[in-house]
Length: 170
Image 1: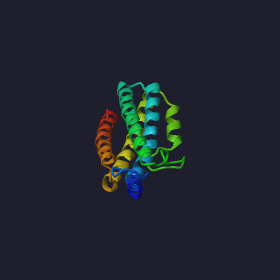
Image 2 (image 1 turned 90 degrees about the horizontal axis):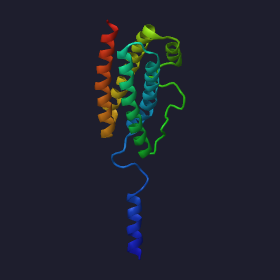
Image 3 (image 1 turned 60 degrees about the vertical axis):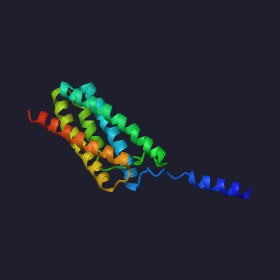
Image 4 (image 1 turned 120 degrees about the vertical axis):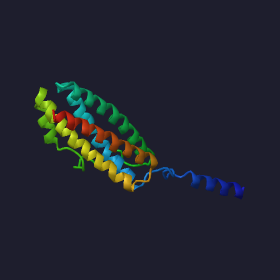
């Protein structure tokens, strides 16, 4: 009987509530907690462009960003839940990489070609901040999936910024 109790105790310790060995460190958790609202802001901007843009390029780019980043939000929220971490780390406080509400409000007051140019400029700035956030976790994060996503974000968003800058130069 004593052996059974010891064995059950060992099993319970092994199955504790700590995150699995594939869990994230503080840098991984912070990345997900900050990137989720950053992506939510991207999706908000994308939805605005779907309603107001004149340019097919802007509408298509906005749609692609909304699709990609919505999926990434779900992925990061899944990690945060698995790590027993807060899924809304910003708690309404200003965060690195976030655009001020006044910038978004200014876009909401424009239409057509003026909106397109403002949206492209704003989105390039926003994506650039996301690249910097992703680079930070590449050097400090331990979670393989977080690092892989961060690498994807750097590559994809740099490509999007290049396309946006090309469009702005026309």
